[in-house]
Image (cartoon, rainbow, N blue to C red; front, side, top):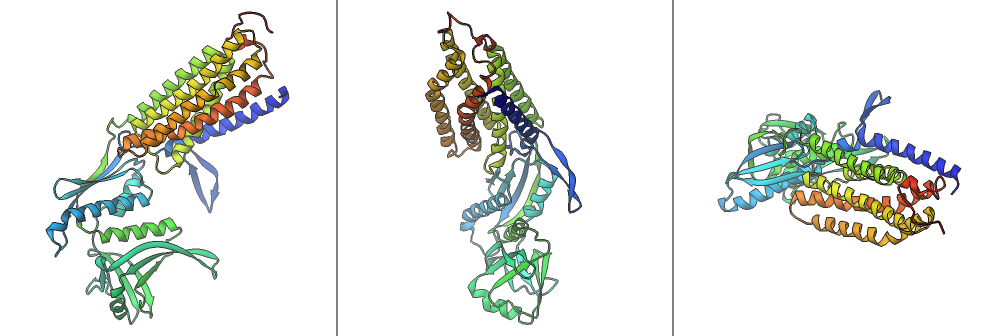
Length: 438
């Protein structure tokens, strides 16, 4: 590789690294508008999903009671199905760190981790804050409802393409049991307006015109449904009115992280200091090669942050942060192995560029086995029931792939880019010869 080409590649990778660092650590508002609105960019670190030990948690305790006419012997099964349905509803809205557990003898505890803003809390409250049984009536005062929660077979959001307006239309389908088709058709025979209630509170209404509901399916369509996600939220809200038990909110509110309000900040500071020590060690120990390794490690960190924040199932708790640091140690150790092997060959009167090439070949098996072993540990951890262990598993599993890429691809490329500037002088890398060059 020529010096000119190496310079160009270093400039290109430097620009890429600056973009990666900005994307990872900087929030900003775009300097232009879209449909008259300003939008903001949220960096990778801000988008990391945190476990409840280092991130704020929203907590709701419900008293769970049997509906009228339900046998007491069914209570345990109904409580299990109710908490699992609440968990499913929240997870389908994008909240992955959700735990649902039995609380005492007659209550259910819902905890949602990684609550970043007050908007998240409001969304949870609006969705499942105070569940009440759903019912359907042709009267605005909810008198004489023609169907209720037990009559619903399924509720889901879907979309279709409307050729007249050349756009996707999003709808919520409420599918009733087959044995309700005739009674619903009779109740809506004259058309009119269908009112949907949660308890005594009206949720929404739909104008049927002069048509009756003859197939046992209500198609909810609204200008508010700007996406399938919006329609899905309405479908999930209706599902909260179909729970097996009647729920009354006993207490709710946000809970500080287990390790304290500033836990994530202190952990981030500790990790930054740890990483800085690694950088200083590499630079002092290997000089030019140390700077090259740090350049590579910044790509390792930013790529890892991108993957960890973009995979929905990943939540970083304290164990996950430890996994992050372990993966960082592994990649630093890989660089040290390569540089030490190169130093060994250089001390035996091998030219620097040959020493680097041989060192990378001889350490290939070791770095590959190390990272694959870490991947296997991470993969096994993903199947453990503990969220803490799963968080550790995700961190080491994802970052092992990034480590292999940085060590075996980027490192080889960066060394190849460096050697045109210094192919013989090992002193610039803190290498010292034991004799004359062959």
